[in-house]
Length: 147
Image (cartoon, rainbow, N blue to C red; front, side, top):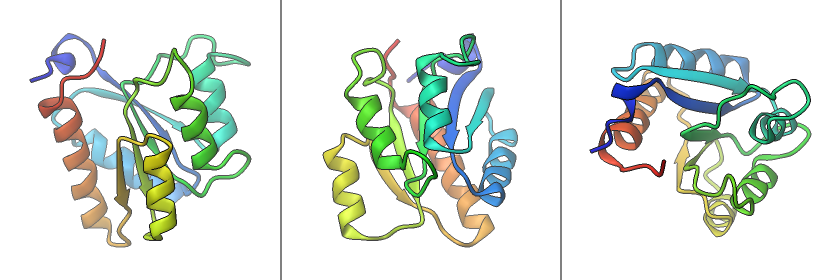
């Protein structure tokens, strides 16, 4: 069991361009049992700047988990995934692809690029909240994360 949440808030990077999904995810994490800091990147370019701690993000904390949409402006989710997983500094950060796509090609490519899991975003608000709670429970209560 990970005791990460007892020592400090869990750092989560949400890479999502849909304002409705951002609000819903923020609300779900506000209700979470585990203390967390949810940082939102509205596109792939901002996500990569946050992760590299550059151009105004020098004080950004390295996330414990990344929730990544695939359909993003600037750099898409697959490009972000590829860059993170090819970086010696970042490759151990778990990445949950959270996408509306059910396409087998997207799922296979995400795993080929070393996504840690792939979750299809439901349209229903209650179901998305339940998925967010499941992600939180699994990644921060069940799994032992690298330090």
